[in-house]
Image (cartoon, rainbow, N blue to C red; front, top):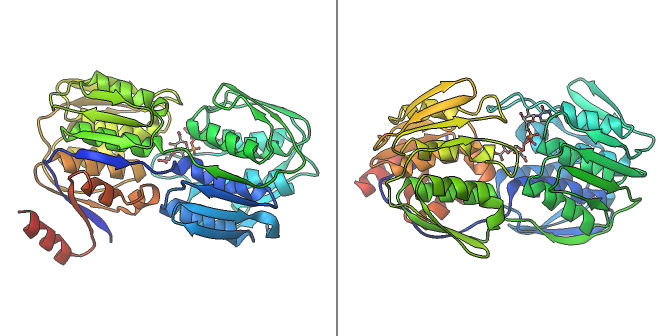
Length: 430
Ligand code: EPZ
């Protein structure tokens, strides 16, 4: 089993290049099949989730040419199969974006129902509500979503929950519906806007992405395009909190500071010095950080995907902090692991009360999910001792070259998989 071994206690110092946004790339790659022309997409992150989705897209008959690790050409003209195999959705939930893309273009799609995951049950009722509103017959047959329509007709869709996935999925289906679709109470995340911009570059007519109301005038066909994915605000924020927790001085490069406003606000509140540049942000911490309170919210609120990272940092801030997780029902599992490193935390329902401690102690911990795994690495980096993070397969799903980038700013950490490698690292750093 792959693990990270970390010798912490050293401030992270330096510059780190941020890659393309995983959650934008996954939706954009799915949307790329909506034209019979060739689409070139660059600045995609070379992470497991992206590679699995590209396999799924190949699996339904599209031509996928990986130009390099961050650039891909896709041509959907050869698609004859609208049934996405269960294996892919089991590996990554975001395969469900092929529902909206296939339904939009071919008026038919079959995709296995995604299960829940470690952070919550993750229903897709709002996705199905949107497809039905556009005129699709949507049934659940043998664990699959089967959606088909004679034609899709623009409608008024009001989402009961602000949901990134449903906003993007229904937006894709509506792109090639007849007439006008108005979507209300939509998600406003930067990656929602990125998908809308991508579709518009293919000839779609989508207005209002990033606001509460998206208006789509359906088109009959989409054409090829060349598109670059936005930087990953969550990867950037992860390195910014790593700087805070390790009393470091880190500059994240190739970012859009506006996408990081909530993160910058919280880092400033706890006492970090944050400097913004056109496409970079510098975070400096002298270590005397103080508590604050945070509630995760849809964008532009504090992102739920940054909750574990701020949780680890607050556990080292003087005073009592609270975190309220308002998006997912089970996103505090990592706090049990953090308590094993000496953190002082009490969880009640969707709220955690954190008493700051001076130091964690190194321990062997397990990553319960992608962002929590990255956060436990931050905890290990902040700790003067040896920490081993198990189950890093989760981290590899969403962070490209995570250990390499951390080593480039001073981390003593390696990816290992045997006791012998653990002993070798321990000897080297002792
Ligand atoms: C996306 O998941 C991201 N994943 C998640 O990032 C992120 O945490 C989440 O958005 C919120 O920002 C990708 O983009 C691949 P939602 P998604 O639909 O779209 C409820 C990561 O770490 N809901 O916005 O699945 C749902 O249960 C991952 O990169 C319904 O009730 O999230 C949740 O409580 C983790 N019905 C809330 O809405 C629905 O039909 C937000 O979910 C859909 C969602």
